[in-house]
Image 1 (cartoon, rainbow, N blue to C red):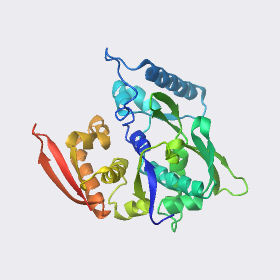
Image 2 (image 1 turned 45 degrees about the vertical axis):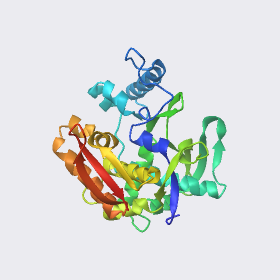
Image 3 (image 1 turned 180 degrees about the horizontal axis):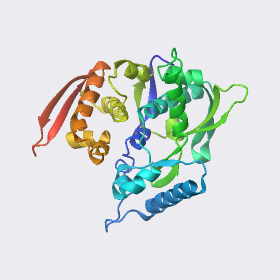
Amino acid sequence: MTTGKFIYSNRLLNIETGQQLTKNKHLNFLNKDGEMNPMILSKVNNTIDDILHVEQTGQEKFYIYLPNEIEEKLPKQLLKQISKDITSSEVRVITAIVALAQFAKAKNELVYFDQINRAYFELDLSELYQMMGVGNSKGKLRTLVKEALFGLNQKKYVLIKNSSISISHLVQVHEVDGKNPNKLKITVEGCFFNFEKESYFHLPADINKKIRKFSTGRPNAQVELFIKCLYQAKHCTKNNTVEYSYDTVFKLMKLQKLVDNKNHKHIQPTIEKAFDLAKKLDLVKSIKEGKDRMGKVKYNIEFC
């Protein structure tokens, strides 16, 4: 499973980049008066109440990973209390689990629950390490993988399918085998495997290994999410090119976080780091920066 390609859901990538409301054509975020859709508002408020209640009662805390439009409407202090950004290790773990879920499905080891569009399978940590590109490593790197996996266990996501909305985990670790601590029981959301009902693109099976090899400096979740967006764009293009406005790149990479943290100077280096990595991955051949009719920056990207 470390050669070739595997399928990746467009809906899952939208969730990771906070674009699930932006890209959904069946569910309006705002009504005609500019107010938030009551169904969305109710679901989000109930989850926020649950998070705050758990925090007050000392139970195991969880967080919610929100679409961009909802994040923008919440007070910053509340957002810090209820939400956590996705980490680069979590981005890679999600990628790895998508591949492993498909591998389990191919071996008829994936148990599907149609009513809730989720599936269960057993995962060996050695397989996860391999898909993460740290199969031959020990110590700290493996610890980071396990921390990222259980970090996903603490996060819920806004899941939108057509006109329905739910807030749930993407990945849940249900049980650790007492006899074999490396054997885990995992439940995943339908966008990890149910591609008869999902639009998708392809990722290289060794993408995590390559990203680990070619990345420079500190791992960056925004960069790695944008790499997935570029693979998606390459899959969809008919002429091997794509044009992104600066604003689109800014949103896909969730760079508003840098603005909020007063790290404006890191915005351009982060974009450049993503493009540099895309070239090293033999994904992108060239990037030409230009201006649109309004004088705003745009990027013309040619794929390999």
